[in-house]
Image (cartoon, rainbow, N blue to C red; front, side, top):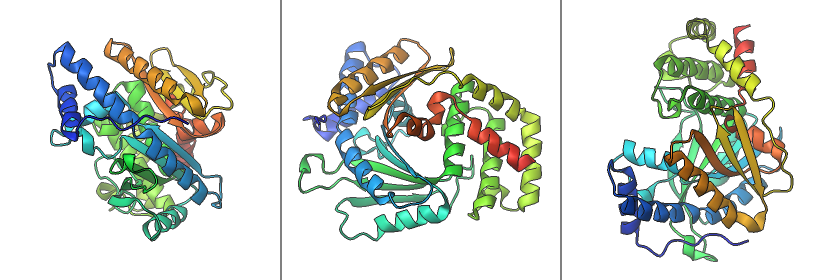
Length: 346
């Protein structure tokens, strides 16, 4: 399987490309050069995340409840938005261009899997950062997940050494919450995932996250930590009623029923969500067609620059049914969250 090499340009040039893409008025020539280099920089992360994903699948094989393992390359509009929001960040040091994720049945399983990585002396990759948003939920929106950031180190293939990768470990409740935030962001056309947009929706997801934390026996979202379980559910009911959240969520879920296309035997899938038409195009690629997948990914991202309202992402998560479980947001599938909220309010 052929993967994209690390660009020959220096890290300084890569960072320059990032600054151009984040700037307000680059020339067309500058933007074309910067986008080409940024896409090649993103593409070279595919090999490291593929090796991380293989290890992660092996480690989760004996866990209960059919854990889901998935990988993705960060979307270029998201990369550019992040560079704009954090001016001090450099493209060459962005930690989550390549991402791999495990979705597990319980917080105990998350802890167990994290322990396997953190205590493994034979794991050659360098642990750079640990962000534990489960023990310390994000106060603004209630985000909960465990992030382990590594610098890739492989003596057998040192060309990729130093590339940063992010591993996310989360429970199923945390996963349906996080993907629902993205789904509603798509529908509302507001960056809820970045804690921007409708404060009412941000508050709804924050109190819901605290309710889930009660269920899982993990630390509560700080701004709701003074509420016991019954008080939390009462506050969730009030916020949901004021917002009409379930009415909107149920409409989104219904629209997702008929948009899955059947793709079998593929190692990678390009998902292209059209939020206006409420349709998803799913295209599969075999192991030897990764270059073609990258090319198609860039093509749809360029259509976004031309004004089309699309949300493309290139992912790998196994069979098509697992793909939908790993990335329900790209199928506008929010039914699991709707079910969980109704159970809480009942």
